[in-house]
Image 1 (cartoon, one colour):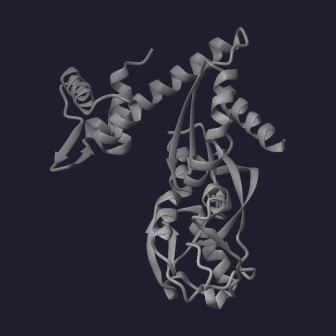
Image 2 (cartoon, one colour; image 1 turned 120 degrees about the horizontal axis):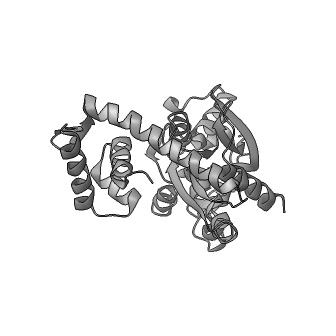
Image 3 (cartoon, one colour; image 1 turned 135 degrees about the vertical axis):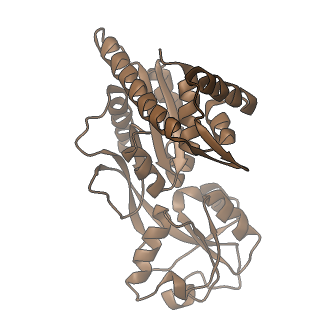
Length: 297
């Protein structure tokens, strides 16, 4: 089994943060520091340059990261091949998903999958669609789930589920329930951040009406759908654009309301994604099949 200190090192190197590595590995930050210092003593090399609150990899750190990734991949391949000898479903499965999928789509699948395959170790990385694509290409994930329209030629995409964005606001009986695109464009907007599939779909919809985001009044960009909902609840007059799946509870409770903008085409797809030309691991294949069956019901 690979040295746990290497796993700690990989996490710190990936995030360039001791705090985020501690959160990912569920250990304390002093423990992270201890493991890194032990590695540096063992190799008699500094692995990170420290400048104030920022860190970066040294040349020795970059070399160690290459070999640590190779060791991790070889160990995973060995684990999978050994367990395939007697048909057991075991091993590590590193999932990554864009924010909407992480918050509202994948979590309901995980408990039953874990119950069926208790020896598969699951992790789930949350990021926007662009970040998930990058993590796949860097070898940090086995299987991703994204939204949006942009595609990388280095990745393979497979439809998982249809979705639709909706325009939402704090309830206001004085405002019309349906807006034209021109009326929509006159409101302050609360949107997802650059790199998100949600923002990309909106930009494509606006482009069909010769509109650019730079021409509109954007009150705030958030990297969280939950933050958008909370902002809207406190900001009458603002409009947000999020997945309808994110609004079930708030709409039912009367905390937010959906506004129809028929001229905006906001349909999109949730897709599974992995590196082009590379076969999925047995664990990833099982999870993808399980997800398809769940949403076909």
